[in-house]
Image 1 (cartoon, rainbow, N blue to C red):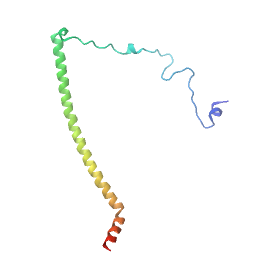
Image 2: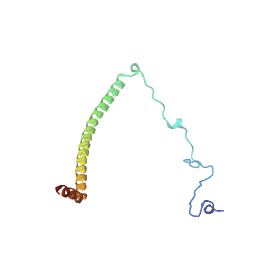
Image 3: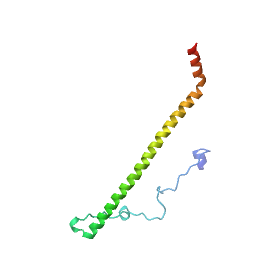
Image 4: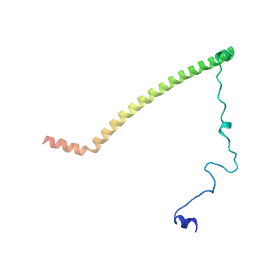
Length: 118
């Protein structure tokens, strides 16, 4: 009995290799998690840090703070532009849908007005 007879004439089946696990390759060595992760950073006390190291850390923190402030301004500019574009698009969509509804129902509206005049 072949695979077609067992599962039906029009079916295609793949059973894989017996004993093979998903995501594992033959012959590859498995690394442990501890060997791929780095050791945790040890935080030193301020008293143990030299003046030069402290100055470089403070300088780095100031530069990062300036960067975040500058990028925040750029994000705010983009956010306000996107907000105004969305508001304009919403207005245009509302006007367009109203015009389309009036156009498609023009004959019904005309009949309503004619029945009111009589």
